[in-house]
Image (cartoon, helix red, strand yellow):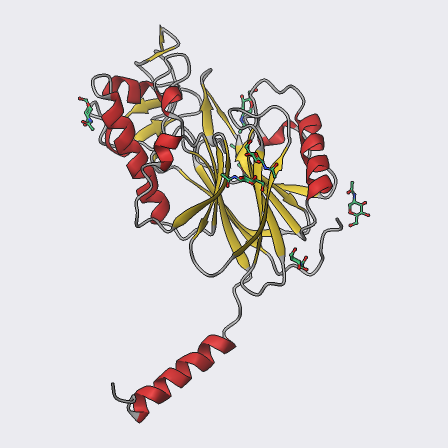
Length: 327
Ligand SMILES: *[C@@H]1O[C@H](CO)[C@@H](O)[C@H](O)[C@H]1NC(C)=O
Ligand SMILES: *[C@@H]1O[C@H](CO)[C@@H](O)[C@H](O)[C@H]1NC(C)=O
Ligand SMILES: *[C@@H]1O[C@H](CO)[C@@H](O)[C@H](O)[C@H]1NC(C)=O
Ligand SMILES: *[C@@H]1O[C@H](CO)[C@@H](O)[C@H](O)[C@H]1NC(C)=O
Ligand SMILES: *[C@@H]1O[C@H](CO)[C@@H](O)[C@H](O)[C@H]1NC(C)=O
Ligand SMILES: *[C@@H]1O[C@H](CO)[C@@H](O)[C@H](O)[C@H]1NC(C)=O
Ligand SMILES: CC(=O)N[C@H]1CO[C@H](CO)[C@@H](O)[C@@H]1O
């Protein structure tokens, strides 16, 4: 081995100096995504009719391919933390060996993964005891620290039962469990809350961040043919978001014109296929195509690109905020 020549040594020094002088990244990108469990996919009461019809003869291959597409989509992003719902063993088993995400806590179908870089350190994990969860015994939570080590952030993944009648009461139980256990500067709970974001105001010292979407701001379709803004973040109000967006990639509706839902053929619905072979994007119309042609929903070719019946919502949090939450 020879010593580097003077010019390349100088280049190295220059690169080092630039790295040290660069402003430190103080933002954290977090996704909440319901990846759709395989049972619901084929449930004729509330499952996805296009998937059911396209995959009638090969359900297990279809599910495997869909899950692999979900992993491919996730690995194509550079999100720091994934807060997932409807995570089954069969989904985790298909995580590619090359995936950059690492599972750090899970309770039933609620899971937390971090991007396996040196940006974050895991400090602690928690089983939060919160009522009314769908297939999650606890709300799993983890406390991480930024690469600078000066801010602690606790993240949690929740999937609320659709039957909850008072979201204000739910938020109150969640925030009291958080204040009982968590001593971090910041808290971020992402999830499928199964209720419109407008159902109740956030509890004291918390804010809600949700994404506008071209599906009437909805992130999932209810089996009664309306879009619900179900997937969002409840977080310390001292934490601000610099961006919140939702991706329609692979979105699967529950009610589609010309397909059965709950044993009934739906002649009118907010979604329809743009072409019979399902290789083009879906069309959406909030008034069921009454007098309009609807809008094309990007990246939704249902027979080849399906991912989930929820949109993935990503928020970029600014963890350099001046004020800190009081424990
Ligand atoms: C499953 O069957 C459907 C309909 O025949 C087809 O479009 C799809 O490509 C098949 N998927 C697999 C993985 O074989
Ligand atoms: C969290 O829950 C899991 C699953 O029930 C259990 O194995 C584990 O011991 C619990 N951890 C704590 C700290 O209570
Ligand atoms: C973050 O947590 C670590 C370990 O519990 C603690 O030593 C540190 O003081 C915490 N930092 C902040 C800013 O709360
Ligand atoms: C909210 O935060 C303020 C200080 O920022 C604190 O005085 C108050 O007790 C907090 N309220 C609750 C319900 O935690
Ligand atoms: C969607 O949300 C945006 C931003 O909050 C708002 O301006 C817009 O009116 C909403 N659209 C619908 C259809 O609710
Ligand atoms: C909220 O809920 C109602 C049904 O109660 C629905 O009609 C509406 O479109 C929903 N979606 C949003 C985004 O508010
Ligand atoms: C799957 C997993 O890692 N679960 C952990 C979540 O956090 C709790 C509390 O620390 C642990 O007990 C679990 O083992």
